[in-house]
Length: 248
Image (cartoon, rainbow, N blue to C red; front, side):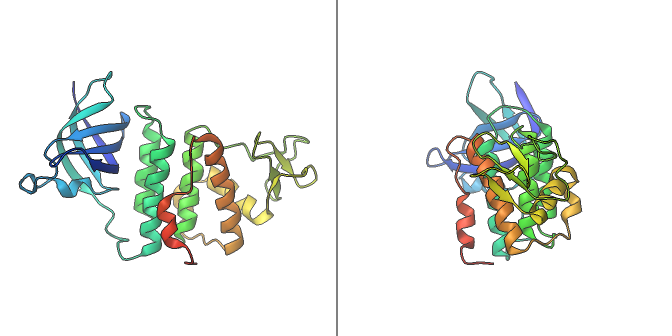
């Protein structure tokens, strides 16, 4: 079949002297791998379309039983140019692509994930704190993939957690209020708990003016990283964030 779809370029790698393989997250067909024949030839004029993070319209030959599809056409519709001079935003942008690539299974369709990525890319250049946008993005991605634990009430006593801190067991993801916390749980402060609950339940656009202090950023980042590590085989911290070591 010949199919047309919108797609985000997650990553590319060489296939031959003139061709590449591109990994796309598409709106209607999930994550796919596509062979782009002749993509590196300058006369084709399409090599720039394969920059990571570009949102393109693609036409491809699809075979459900084949792991590698064949690209027919590509037309770049938008790219992440606005943050090109901001190291923090650019690194977080690349980190988001890594997270999506590692946590989304190929050919599993979920238009909500594509819409989330598109929304995040639009917000990242203008938000007050790119870390807040990144953590909100990770939270909603975990919800869409079914991995985000319920942090609304205590597993032991049933107390509503809004307005209080909590502890979470990273092995079985039991969530406990401050009175029911047991030894070995990861502790989340009142402040970080409130932010996480908002990130889980409010629209992405609501975090546009949110700024995280260092303590909240570390707590929330660790919490989300532990969830990804528990549920995504071989998960590790995105390499793009290594560029930000020592950067506040």
